[in-house]
Image (cartoon, rainbow, N blue to C red; front, side, top):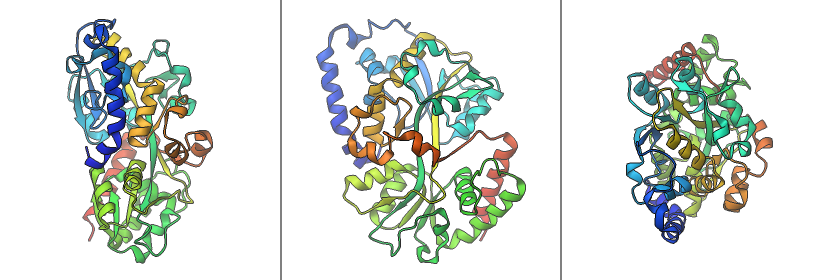
Length: 369
């Protein structure tokens, strides 16, 4: 984890550890847990592990501290395609944490069991729009957990003009100072929006993908590099090497704010991109009691507070606003999410043909001179 992000999280972690110390007794040994002793395994993004960041899942961490490593194990992935490939290859996990454009693949390949929402205490507190994104053919297969934006991060002290649209990325004044995420889907979506396609996913066709490809090739003189690790979106704008970082998550903005570096995280006129990720239970998951114990901790207001205060991310639970720093509530619009969601272009599930079309397009863009 980036050192500056660690500094942001230290107060939360310290408060959590004080709470654990105060609890003592049976809770610290896991004796009060109703789940069996079999460890569960989660296919997870790095940085979300309860073993390192207990404030993200406080109830689960409290139940198993100090033997948390005996309760849960992790297999990490960097991108959704990697996670899906690992599970298709037979890697044994109980929970997986993909984002919306890949959720459908797990369902289509019969890899998951439906979610028993009656076992999730805070289910009625979850945002209905995010819950709906985890449904397929009327069946709930995913528990929504984290959501956020992708937009343009700008060092406002280094640019003559702060862009206000995706289309502005092509302006020659940003030559050699732009960083793009190395993601075909993200760059397809933002470029389609810049071209006037208000529904990038509904417009996805070979003809539109070809138009997007040519437009992205035209952008290459402005591109300094492609980021593959989120820490690059912290470090390169902070150093001034990059003036604009595109399809960047909002925690990168939070990182600059905590350093008092002049920055903006714009809302493009075409709309920010939005993402939602959630947990699915594999069909052959073991220790299902502990799986639901984890999901209950993940959907609790205290989890929402940890995610918001620690990462500047949104959480599916809508009842935790009073537990989150007011600056973050205002920036993320957590007190008016339904209004903001109407202006946000969320990723949508893609067919395998569409996914391969975008992957091929992006490889051709990167290979172009």
